Length: 253
Ligand SMILES: C[S@@+](CC[C@H](N)C(=O)[O-])C[C@H]1O[C@@H](n2cnc3c(N)ncnc32)[C@H](O)[C@@H]1O
Image 1 (cartoon, rainbow, N blue to C red):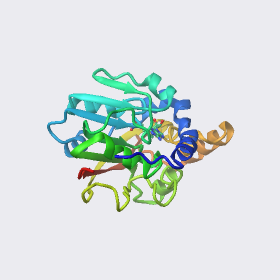
Image 2: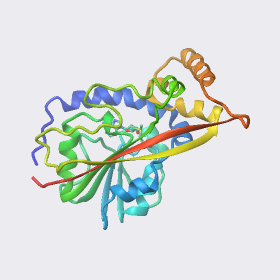
Image 3: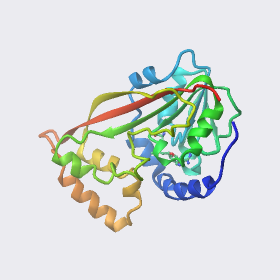
């Protein structure tokens, strides 16, 4: 497949300028974020899976789980501070971006992006995924999202659920009509996280919109958000999440 980088470098640089925010909190990110459920990997990863390419691997929270499902895991991550935390036995860490994947054509059974697809410039990332996949291989994309089922969840997670733009909203996969992929399939899995109020506030602090605030504003914001939490007598909060998973078969060039 011919690469078309017209405008891609500029857009990727713009996106990366924002996303490098994660590196500033890489240790906290690794501590407080959670992987998608094993059941989601079960559903998304084709078997057998000889090679998987993970885009935007971050600190390796999901990479570790991928090593259970695939023989070879190539984890691509552009941010040096995220890579510094990403140490996963059985995975090879590569410097690169979704728009310029440092992997040869046609050898991957799976390309996967977990909580990261909305950062990528399109259609460049879709084209690159198609390039590195073998025909019949799978593109899988998933997000962990807070469930917005009542007033406190809407208010608490407001900054997290904001869309980057209409085509890049966490949870929603939109591929161009020309993309060489079959009809996307998706599943939604629900789970509950029981954590202390402090832990939920710490988790909220790992999202890009919160990282981007100036420190004083961030401290005040997090204090206000803490007040919204329905803390039970044990000092704990039950919050519901959904994992939205997509899988799409590559139809070949
Ligand atoms: C929200 S984090 C998700 C990390 C990891 N997948 C996880 O679930 O914990 C998004 C990651 O995507 C990376 N990223 C941002 N823009 C990217 C791009 N254009 N190509 C590849 N990765 C990118 C960021 O550096 C960051 O590590």
